[in-house]
Length: 294
Image 1 (cartoon, helix red, strand yellow):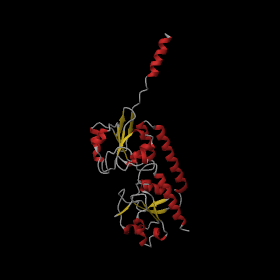
Image 2 (tube, rainbow, N blue to C red):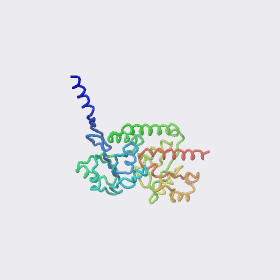
Image 3 (cartoon, rainbow, N blue to C red):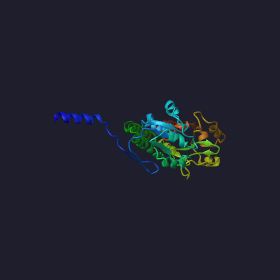
Image 4 (cartoon, rainbow, N blue to C red):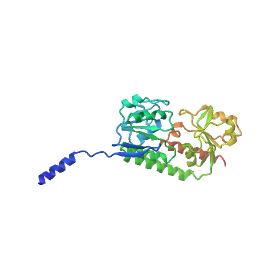
């Protein structure tokens, strides 16, 4: 009898544990259910690719769209399944993913229904706030079965954010114009993540009240807003030439006090943990502006 008991125990130990089903709600309010944590994931946005690596799920990525470039070696080696304007649905299907992570605001969003019709689960990501980034890390960790890494990354993000807030958020306010592009001048409103970064640093977005998330503005509107600081992004890692074009307006406070600053776009315009690198840089710039008041 005892021999039979030990035989049964041995058989039970030899059977691998079943992987539990996963059920989460995405940023479009849709319930996404997987029979088990995803093992083959396709990313349809550069920020999603970066978030997946941060959540410990990089090894499960089998495809991504162009401009997925962080971390550099790993992300750039992934097979490409689309551009900024379209997803190659056949290329996605050929990779046999058990999960696709998509971006709600993408111009490719109209194609996501095709993936649903193919029976490929789609999780829609749309982090809009500093709270959304660690929350998204945790959700991706659950979907990929990497919660331990994801939760540690989320905790690190919240700790760094809170440390910056404690140091800078209550500092004397600084009026900021964040310029994405110059033809025409483009900025962000108060609902944009970059506006939250400004607030973290004690900054005040001079165009916070505009209705559109990323509106265009006129030179006249910028002059009327009289920002004390102009922060530009551009398209690459070098300071855009058009930032210094504001110097012709000598009465503009940002020009009069030489507060024309640059932050590489990938540090602020991707909703990933690296946004805090951009935030730290902006906080230092606003401190420099405050020092020039004396």
